[in-house]
Figure 1 (cartoon, helix red, strand yellow):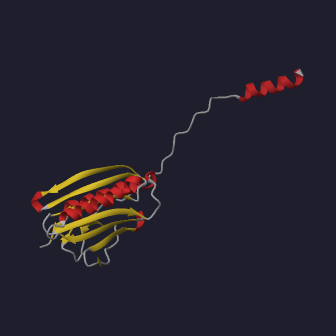
Figure 2 (cartoon, one colour; figure 1 turned 30 degrees about the vertical axis):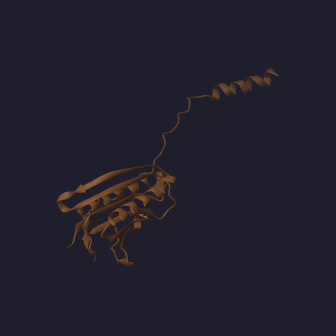
Amino acid sequence: MKKIVLPILSLFLLGCGDDPLPKPKGYLRLDYPDAKYEAASIPLPFSFEKNTLAAPISSVKSTSEAKGIDIKYPSLKATIFLTYKDVKANNLDNLLRDTQNLTQKHTMKADEISQKEFLRPNDNVYGMLYEIGGDAASQSQFYVTDSISHFVSGSLYFYAKPNYDSIYPASEYLKNDIKRIMETIKWKN
């Protein structure tokens, strides 16, 4: 019995070396080009600057109540949808409520919804940016208005199943583009 136990015991003692160390977690690094902006050429009653990474805006979609454009980012598999509506007598409250309701529909999947007020009184631009955290379908919603004639709302959507951890870098990159749209929007009279 000692002939069998002694070799096995010596194997255990000699086989033990340094304690294993856990390896650090690896993270995927996504690098996006520095944003370069140019004036967007659109036949709507407002103008703004868009990222050159976005595809050219090809067409305007129209209904009797609204006009819309899509700012597509093929390399990020995302689109910012912009909708323009005229402010008419007593409909500003309805436009604001509809935009806020659209944002609130994401509460079932969202971890949080934060809002940031946006004011440029010298240019008659007032708005709100909603940042949606979690696995919601849209990561950002916003609107800008002059409170008299113009109302623009926008939403960011990705062409992928919402997974906040996976789309977070692209979402943060595109939030900067949304902020740039809000900062550069000008009303045409």
